[in-house]
Image (cartoon, rainbow over all chains, first blue to last red; front, side, top):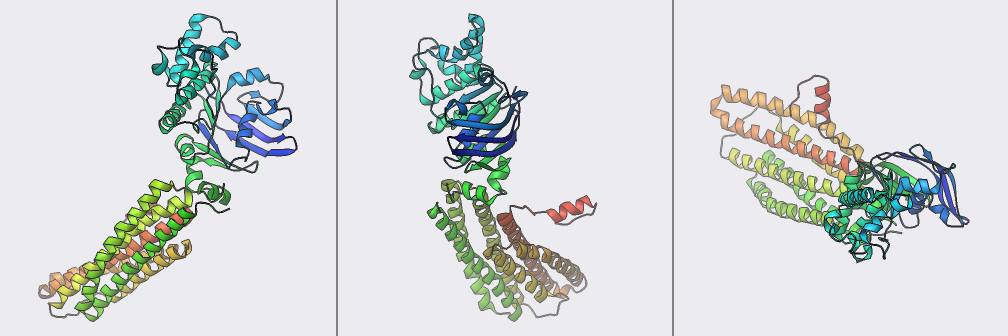
Length: 252
Length: 232
């Protein structure tokens, strides 16, 4: 099951560039939350702070608090444990190109010490079913590589890989922006189904996508969270003029 | 930096076309009232002719609005504006229909003997026309306060219509020889009351467009909460 995310006074820097400034918000469990804003506004940095990926860059720095359920991720939590509980899917699908479909999905499990073949088989199957890919690949699990799939299938494979380690939170950074409309629809349908089991945070430049899949939406601008509200409110009658100007395409 | 210049131009064009439509509908209702006042059939002809232009413009505006919805995926205030335009457009077309109904009644009355009837049609007409004018002014100026002022005027027209119904049905019961004239007057009152309703709808749409506040049916909901019976 998904857990809520509490963010308090989060600040992030790349070198001297203060990219996130005093972000405080509560992301509800088992819902999809969309983050929108112009390029460079800090939304991807924010998502990367939720699984401590931001600090993998040597010039990056973070202060503040992020609690994923009961886990205070910037207070003595192990990055490996955090990334098991917080899965991530990126803009461009990134399956391990030399691994089979099966091994792609099982890779995270093997890293976490799973060796029992029967257990692995079961988790690979359920993960591929949960990512709506099973029917398309079940006959080629070990004979085809992840790279042999179409872009949309590769992205669903990456989602299956993220789901296999049973995370509580799924971070998605523009997961459909490199996909065609049919593949995009499949990813959106998937997000809709998955949010009953996981807490999903999705960064998107596609306003309609945010409106379709997310219950909550946050608007970022210049490293600050301008507005965080129900998606319905944000897209029909936002409170802040800057949000309205952005979503109506008057800047950005 | 301003973006979506073409979209903004299309929104401006949509508003301009709706204002042309508004001008035609307002003129039609004013002419119908004038035709009643001076019993001039040539004015009735003008009303009938304007309906063709109103109907054509209604289709053009709807088509332009649908195109913008489909092609531009408008959001927030732009979305509310286009939805309001579609609804105001329909209301204006019906104002035109009401004007035509009134002019047809005037034609009919011209074939009958003139009689004095216990009904204040000029007062109703003046109030309804004022509501149309103010609701359109609130649209032009994007002024929700003026729109709210229109909403408060509707009760007066409803009251006049109820009074007309009461007095004119009494005439029909008691003076059957002038029942056709009374019936025509009743239908004119009904048309004017509908015009006031359309003006109310337009004012509600202006409030929704500018403030995102859906104020429709609030009166009847409040009355239900208070346990009062309501009429539509």
